[in-house]
Image 1 (spheres, rainbow, N blue to C red):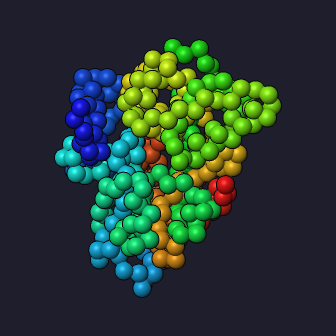
Image 2 (cartoon, helix red, strand yellow):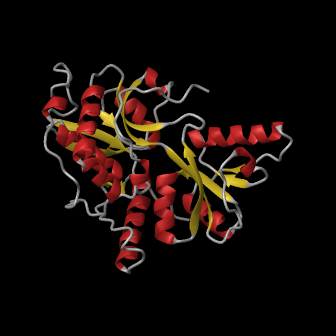
Amino acid sequence: MPSFSPRALSAAFALSLTLGLAAGARADDLKVDLSPEQPDRIRAEPVQAAIDLLPKAYQFVTPGTFTVATNPGNLPFSVYATDTETPVGGEPDLAQLVADSLGLKLKVVGVAWADWPLGVTSGKYDAVVSNVTVTEARKEKFDFSTYRADLLGFYVATDSEIGKIEKPEDVAGLKIAVSSGTNQEEILIRWSKANEAKGLKSADISYYDDEAVQDLALESGRIDAYLGPNSTSAFKAARSGKTRLVGTFSGGWPQTAEIAVTTKKGAGLADAITAAINAQIANGNYAKVLARWNLSAEAVKESRTNPAGLPKS
């Protein structure tokens, strides 16, 4: 069996999505541009109040440029464009708003998820915009400027008999897929243990290295449900029509969790980035970016610098 790099798989997904939309499959709901040029990307004017908050001593990776890391792999967050090199999606669009607000050019670099923490702390990237949740543990090494609510969703096959999953009791005895090492895995494990303590069946938790295999298992009924970021699952459900939402809750359950632009602790960029995002919330550009990528359900009313994060486990 041939092996493919994440970039090649992302490009293949981009091409298949482009062809699917060209064929008219839900094109009215998902007007997705995967070209590297992104002519319809929302742009912004410089925000002097945000620029004034940039620390004079800070040296950008490239002078005059905001270098941002992201992890291409899933829309609406980001994938590689049809040139197989340029990350496009909701996260690059948000990064563009911040760069424009700060009077900077933007360079988006695709990286593996595991590589961004060292890249930011070592100064290889100015920031990461890649669906990073604010946690108290991460706040020891990073500063945060929030821009989206962290919303998780349970999805089942369209013809599943499951009507809703809203509380721990609802997962008792179900076979549920989740990604390892994630907040949602920790929540699902806590729910399962709580059920055991009540004399209920635990959840049968499954892990898949291959997303396509996981999707097939869900659609065929080999697993009962999948728990993951609502935005990616909602995008996929709208595109395929093979899965449906049966419940959402905060990614920090029972606490509220938020997604944030992540910068090196003490670098001094967070306040400027927060001001930039708030300016774009106020003028409506932020809402346009979220709407472009079907992320409006996760909008925040204001960006905050280093809010309380998910507690250490």
